[in-house]
Length: 212
Image 1 (cartoon, one colour):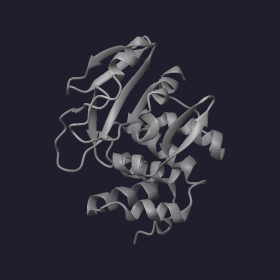
Image 2: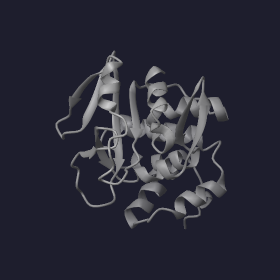
Image 3: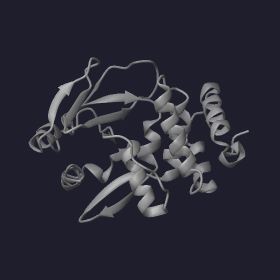
Image 4: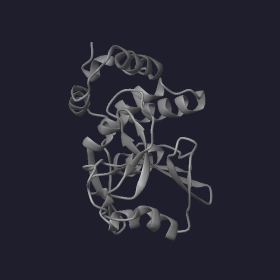
């Protein structure tokens, strides 16, 4: 909680969002979507500012001051760990297969680039937790993102976790907002296939997404 409060205090959540499994407790609080959290990984989708954007806050310094240890993964992505928790920043990858780590000058972190992350930042909302504001994806954006990435998972356990979260959220998502999110995505043949397969796995009607 102190990590979220600190990031909020420097304006991180004005555009960037909390993503990953730690969003599920927020959905449980706001929408009564029951879910048992099973991970200590804390992921943030960082909104990419212009490449020449000046430093706004040194998150590396801030996070390590909270007792986290900074290290670089094999691919050069910056991560922070403390007491079993692992913090990572993720940026939107516009296309191609370039997996190079992305320096984010505005926040002095090195992020992991992944596709479809823009869904989570562009369709997001704010909520007040205790005495601070946090930004997170709307349930419909998180749901569709998980439908896509679940089928890309190499580890079966991660795929099952994604589909489990979709199964929880399918009871609260709204069709009108699902349509808006889907219409914002360039749906390739593979992406449609991933969505269709995930919908089949959880028993969700594809027509509710507005996809034929």
